[in-house]
Image (cartoon, rainbow over all chains, first blue to last red; front, side, top):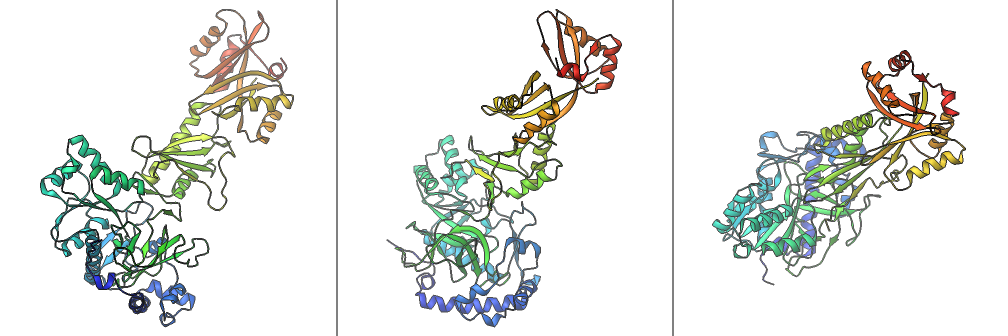
Length: 436
Length: 143
């Protein structure tokens, strides 16, 4: 296959050379994190761990994990390793589940971000001749700016159209001759639908490839997008906590996403024992930034489930490949794009007196739109001989949940002891959307 | 002068009404009157039974949600206009009726009407004043 590289030296590095590079970077990052971030220092001291204990890449397993909860505690700038004056940009996660995660970037970090996106774009065949329609949201969300920096780096023409205004998206796509589309996969599908409604023949568009991410998707969805937009659809992965999009990118071989492991070191652990798993085994992805200046991240638990595969890819790259994300090790749900945890629904319910902590969440997608039903066990205290009173309580529950998660739900009462009880991970969520 | 009624939460599932009634039958508890309020997803089974306290216990034992509350039971003549006469009294007294159900013991004899108003006491007073026969617990349970 005709391979393109933005940084062939790194992307096709030998294992030995890469290991040396990663080891050096890890040691430096750990030293800097300990010296500059009180949060890490406290954690290290608590474990009686010294930065000098990290001598090889394998020693990474001695480091403590960082979770979203840790980042929340450090809100807003507690994880920064440089003075605020050296931070040139901040982004945040959506923050629907509590305080948002704040990511701070130095000029150097912005450069790294542009570098990895540049690699991603060239990997899918992009060059300065391309017109990139960037339909990721611009703003606090990392998607828009991340793609933007990379597109500029390769000298492509960027249309910073951001998300939304679909008709206009399609008009510009047709009139400007966009060749690369970057957005969420579900938005790409929606665009295909609107194109059909507008009578735009997608075959006649110049679009050749899509860089899709920021949500979980499947091969079935890929086939659908490719068929309807007549493009190659490829998966991009990233997260605010690490840098944003550009942690890994799928090449046209479609055999996993290449992790840019000179900047982001991936491990896969068992979410139960927290022990590292061998290559090829599925577990939770843990990422360590090896070069970030503004906000070094040591062993961040992504909660995303994947597996790692080594060996040279058909595209020529030697970078480790991660399997497309297939699930979560926690119970995070995305309903109509909004992040929802079952615990939020539980909290909302338990704030009402008399409501039993037994519930089940049913997600369906009857007409392209997610619907949320919450089954709650009727208890003596919410039961009455009058329908009126029961309905009142049901509505109160619906309102309380809506207040907490920002989504309208339907509460249904069921008989006691009919919902599954918590046994480790209770079957609290039944996802009936056909995402496969 | 109030009578105990038990209400049972029934999920709209096949066989649940049967199961509730079977439990009572096996416990040798007699049903005197019955009504069901149904919504799209659940129903409320309301019963006047021979032994309300024991009925509640046996149902709860098999995980039914049961509630006990007071209702008014009255006797009306089993003839046209019997019930409307009673309701007219309550309306004159501006009493809001939440629900009502009735049963006839033997053809031609008096009918027993179970009434639930928002406030029971003033309703009882209004009915008594109008000379309506209000049934005592024992009278109803042992019909």
